[in-house]
Image (cartoon, rainbow, N blue to C red):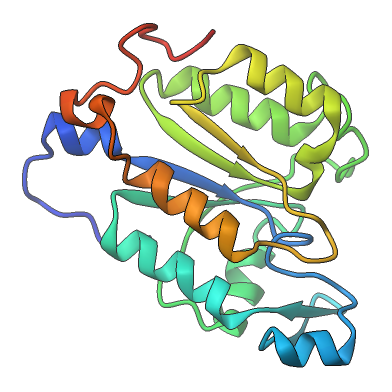
Length: 205
């Protein structure tokens, strides 16, 4: 991650701080992408962990820029686990290195439809429980599963947790990147007061 500043962090900056939990496949990587569409989108190919990935350098660069210019951290939350650091970060050409939440078993995304069993859902709940005032963006194509999406929308304030579920075939779009920027730098009364969850201290509904 980008180097932390030694200067005191104001309440306003703390209120704006966001942690982005980032998946890989269906988010950064869409495979396969037809050749003509890949050219139109400026996609590149890379090989890692015996797979071919099709990605947009501009989207990868977006995450480098946002940790350098906003109060944002990025955490890999992907079945790629430590391979995000050992293989993808250097091959994507990322300037910054991000923390990783490891996949704890071999279930991969088998239980993505069940927020009680899916390892990523449990990891998010653990983080939200231990970061009482933390704000997060969770980006994963499997958040399209209705039961999982509805569970998190029901239990967490939209001021505290934003869910982004790209279509697997396209991954993150410019519209998604705009959503991330707007959540990370809110121009609202909550940002001015330094408390994005004034109606509910825990940010839950």
